[in-house]
Amino acid sequence: MPSHFALYVIAILVSLPSTLAAAFWTLLGSGFTSDALRRHDHAPAAFALLAAMLAGWFGLVTLWRLHYLLLQGRTDFNRHTAWAGLACGCLVSLALIAVTGGTLVFRITFFGWPLLGAGYFMFALWRLPGPPGHVPPVPR
Picture 1 (tube, rainbow, N blue to C red):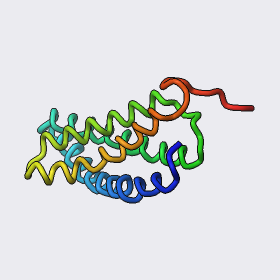
Picture 2 (picture 1 turned 90 degrees about the vertical axis):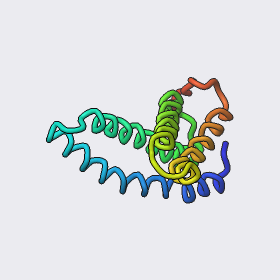
Picture 3 (picture 1 turned 120 degrees about the vertical axis):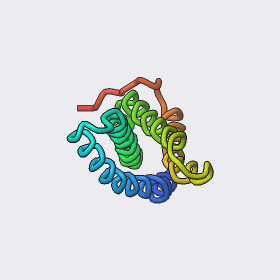
């Protein structure tokens, strides 16, 4: 089980800034997506951006859910969904590093930051007791 200190450090230094940046850029991306789809202009880019925003938010919400569940000491969550959410977040971060402009160092620093949190929680999930897909029954 991860320590509470490590969970708080990851939440404050990785998850919170990533969530705030995603919230800001989602507002701008939503405006572009709705305008592009309404005007029938750049529709493939709009759909790709919409898919990236949904997958990125799935990853961020998974980070926060895992943070709170592990902070409470609970391991009765669906690990398949947790792995899928972390994988979506990683794929979106890697795609942003690959397709955006700017220097490689800036892109890795700015868009690769959520990869630290995803990597930490992937390691924590891997170390939890029980098989990877096992969901223990909830006591009644």
